[in-house]
Image (cartoon, rainbow, N blue to C red; front, side):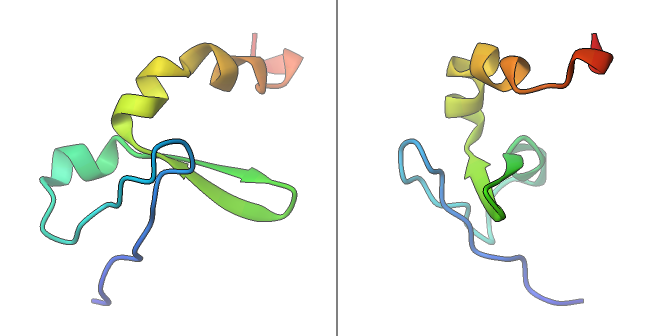
Length: 61
């Protein structure tokens, strides 16, 4: 098994550590924008949930 990819939150800069609690690591949110992969830490994802919901296609609702 390979080591987890190092990622940082695009909002606050927090990094996801390899020794982070697995439940917390699963709470990170990823999105593809303009061909790139962007990450939000759990705290920023909670604060910006309305922005995230606004990006969902109309078919989702």
